Length: 437
Ligand SMILES: C[S@@+](CC[C@H](N)C(=O)[O-])C[C@H]1O[C@@H](n2cnc3c(N)ncnc32)[C@H](O)[C@@H]1O
Image 1 (cartoon, rainbow, N blue to C red):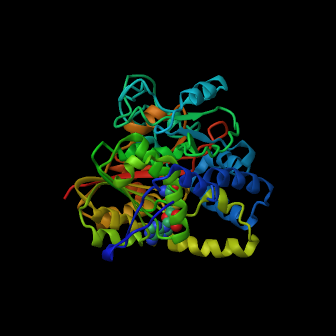
Image 2 (tube, rainbow, N blue to C red):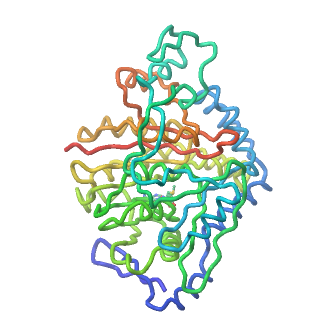
Image 3 (spheres, protein in one colour):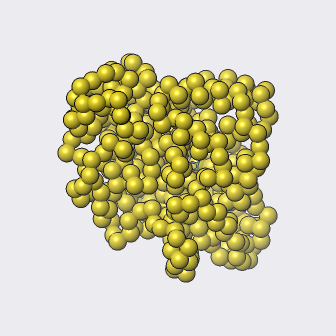
């Protein structure tokens, strides 16, 4: 049984497990189940019509923003039967047999597990930014020595040169996610009386914002937009924070979030996890400088599901209007997160859309209005070690002012995972800020 205790003005809801495992299990049976939801959504989406208004809109926008990789991304987004799912193991359950079973079925580990900081990867002698900053301009030479623009690489990963050992910093060996090269469907985890669930199904690109957050044992962490809770679960797999505050403004989704946490995390950790249902934009003011790490997995125009809008043309038109408002909300959430993190702390901003206006342009706007924040470069830390699994796009280059800002700067505004055949993960954009004062 889940109990929400309202704590004074902050209306913090303390998340608790029921003491009786029997009651706990009974409660689960009647819960909406996020994994089933995910699979059901895929099945429903595959039988739903593609929404032409949305597709035309995407073609226009993403054709321009993503250039040569849009047609293959489009093909993936339009074909739900090719979508892959990652299986994140629950470190609080006994998963030895499951791991062997998955390996026997051809699943492999997304992340290296031999210990912290052990990934082998490839590092370029110099970052190839120049190339990407000029994708829509002619040029003769880049830091990689490309001289011919007639065969540009399709993605950031394509152009990265090979070897030199490196690592996946901050990566805890306890975060284990298995993926399959084919779109193999794995069943949702069964309910077992009194037992925690063994795994969580997710888009493997969802782990990138959590890896970028780099939570360490003892950190105070805020997950500002938390439901249904996939990233909160991933956070708690990577480390044991002193405090993990999961916030979700929508009350129904907040219940869903609580149930997710309840079914994966042991009671012994309940005193370190809180669930609240506040507007995320208020945290910077309510709890200034209180956290070491803040994740803003922002509400966005979810490209995968919006392409299959249930309500036809009318709903698509409504969503396209909403879409215009999203960057304002996203920037407000991000500014609030920067207010809630302590000086020296870290904020990760992420979305599951390819849209430059909700990604790089939000980051740009917030950078311009928050002098106390600066961006980190995630290429060596995430793109290089994980390019084998994900297709990373070049930064948004259609926006002249953005390109101009970036061209004198080796930092990018973020990294973008673009779904591609055989690597259908994403869309996922992420950017990491450090609060310097
Ligand atoms: C992309 S989803 C988060 C997914 C979640 N992080 C996960 O990994 O499962 C964005 C969430 O933000 C919530 N949201 C929207 N506006 C918000 C606000 N002003 N404050 C807090 N949450 C908000 C939405 O209801 C939605 O559940």
